[in-house]
Image 1 (cartoon, helix red, strand yellow):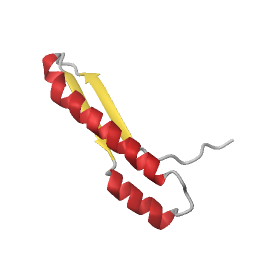
Image 2 (cartoon, one colour):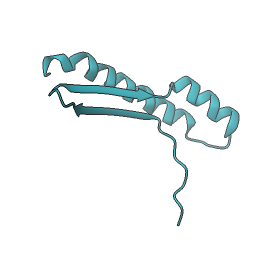
Image 3 (cartoon, rainbow, N blue to C red):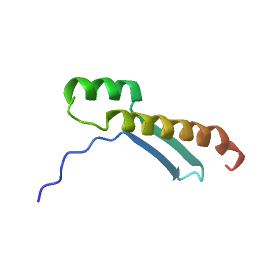
Image 4 (cartoon, rainbow, N blue to C red):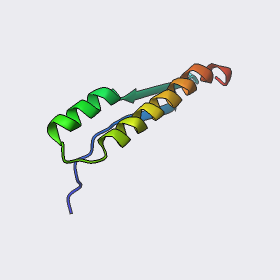
Length: 73
């Protein structure tokens, strides 16, 4: 059975490079852009605002992780 298409909405990664340094990065769609696109292209989808709030929540926590990670690495 073929896999269904998926969209990356948010990712947070922590990697150790060959110099022994930890690299943190995150990528995220803009929650407002996401909501606008979903409303325009998939108005029948009922979870748009819940997903956009989830993206906001994840971004806020990722910002906190990025700001406070200097204490650990």
